[in-house]
Length: 304
Image (cartoon, rainbow, N blue to C red; front, side, top):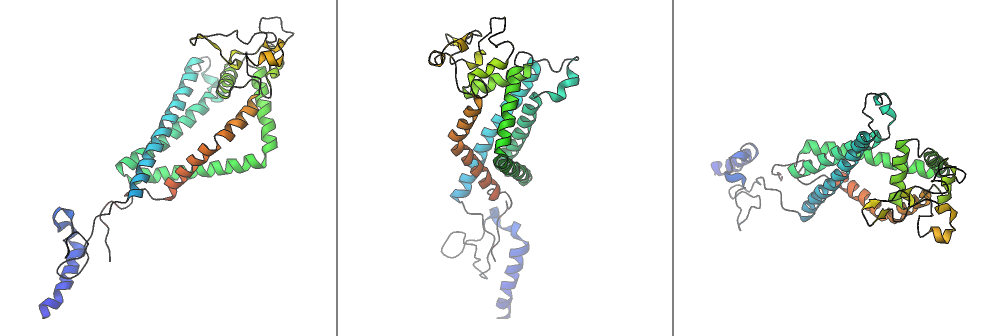
C-alpha cells in the first residue's frame, strides 16, 4: 500500500521533468482512447498538443494574404520612386546636391517602410517566428497610432488643410512646365482621379503657357492628363488633345476633357473607398490585437 501511495508522486515528477521522454511527443492515451491528457496510472495530466482551431487557421492565412498584398503595393511604390529618380536624372552629379528636396524620396521611403513591415508580418506568420511577429506588431501599432493622430488633425483643421492643399495644387499648376516634379505629380493626380485643375479645368488659366493671352499653341488649353481619352487608338499618347479646349463651352468641352477639379475628385474617391479603408484598418487592428496563432507558444501546453 505504501508503494502504491507513492506512485502518483513519481508520475507527477516524470510529467514535469521528463516530458521529452514520451514517444513521438504524444501524451499517454487515457481510458476510452484518444489523448485526453490523463495518465492511466496516477490520474496526472500530461502535456497535450494544441488543438486545431478554425479561427486561428483563418486568422493566420488572412494575415499572410493581406500582408502579401501590401508588400506588393510597397514594392511598387518603391519602384515608382526609384523610376522617378532615374527618369529625372536626379542622381546625376550636377543634381545630386538637391536630391534632399526631391518628392520621389517620399515614394521611396513609404514604399520601403510598407514593404519591410508587411514582409515581416507575412514571413513571421508563415514561419511562426515570434521575433518577426513582434516587430510587425510594433510597427503596426506605430502606423495605426499615426493614422489616428492624422485623422484627428485632419478633422480639427479641415478648413485650413483644404486651403493649404488648394494652394499647393495651384502652385503646382503654375509651375507645371518649369518643374518636372510638379508635372509628374499633377499628371498622376489628374489621370488617377480623372480631374482637371484644383477646383475646375479653368484653373489652368494661371499657367503662363496655358493662359489665353500666351503666344504659344498651348494657349487656352489644358495638359493631356486632363483629357478623357488621351490615347489615340489605345496606344499613342496624344499630347495635343487638350489644345483650345477652354475656348469651347462646357457642354462641348465635357466630351474632351474632365471639367471637375481634383480637390472634389479626391473627396469623392475617399467617400467611395471609405468602406475599403475601414475594412483594411479593422483587419490590421484585428491581426495586431489578437496574438497570431501558435506564435507565442509553439510547444505543447500543460494543463494543471
